[in-house]
Image (cartoon, rainbow, N blue to C red; front, side, top):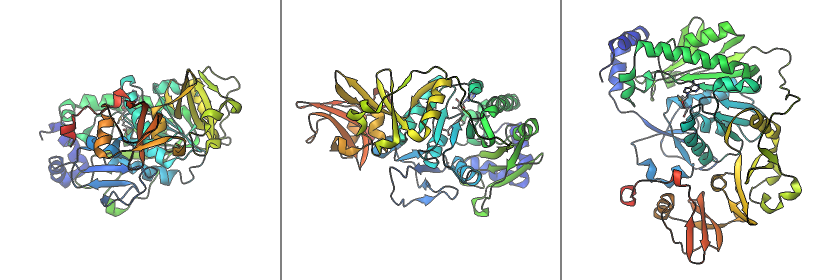
Length: 457
Ligand SMILES: C[S@@+](CC[C@H](N)C(=O)[O-])C[C@H]1O[C@@H](n2cnc3c(N)ncnc32)[C@H](O)[C@@H]1O
């Protein structure tokens, strides 16, 4: 790999005699790793575990992930190992995770969001935001596959969070960066690297931090990460943040065996992953806590904003309430034709997000009533809250699952007239509607597998 000389000089400053090892590591194979969705796949995993997370594993080689129906069912997420260190920041800085409001500000394609969702249960609200419109659908897809209903996917610029002041207990800023830590995985990042770009990224990151800071509650935690090594984009930005605002640096306990490097700069401590030390790509993470003032209770504004969300009175929910297990813990809403559900525990917060931000998808979309017929929505099939006794189930093998996921015409031995859930190894994949001998495949066309069956087998 031909590295830009000024980049090498910068790395020599950090690494000294270890520079050659670092450069050698950039020419070695990247580890392949996945993070398991324990709510969907609670089984023992035979692979080597990633030490800084309870649900991450290294695979011995890279399989054709597209050909695994379990990936499409949301049983796991393919994610770079270092970035799973987010779990340590959350677990250590927020040991009590009850009733919190959480924001993942730079969320697409959803690696950190799906990880956060696994750490914050239904009495918490998770807002998963992405500013770039074209990247929002893949984020929503990954969140929906993960299957939890306490999540709102939004499409807003950080400065548009102005109306959501002092609301979040935790904000994750996985900032757009110069990508030095991804040189091994993405050689284009090497060509795009320049000193100017590092400065440009650092300034953009400061803008993002300054824009979102007012949305963090007093005493709240901001977790900042990048996949780059430059000090300007990492410690220096956070030292600047603590200088500008009232915030303190939170230190984490890191085991020596993980080979994560604690870095100190201008009195600020962060955690660095170098590919020749830790088993993963280059990564940086640091945590700050906003100074706690006397009154840390968030109060909803008296005047409500506008929203297209209408709550459905309880007496009108009987026809579809049974589709969720523990339906009494969910509040039902209509949005245009659609019925959706959100945990009652966070219903007011959920409505507040609708009143203030541009919501792309949210909660569990249950379905629509068309000419009095209930038509289930795709996310319901993927939901961990689905009450399977409500539906007829067609269990499929791998071959049938792949055909279904390709949106091919399918014929099944079983199945009742009407809606049937397609299930692979106990996990919902989507819906078919049986009409006479025909099965209409309702897998979303934008999500379908595009590889041919012979390439998948
Ligand atoms: C490092 S990636 C996020 C990866 C994601 N957190 C994950 O774990 O899958 C940074 C994200 O920031 C978004 N982004 C780009 N410019 C931005 C800006 N000015 N403000 C906020 N986010 C931005 C990018 O579109 C990208 O999705």
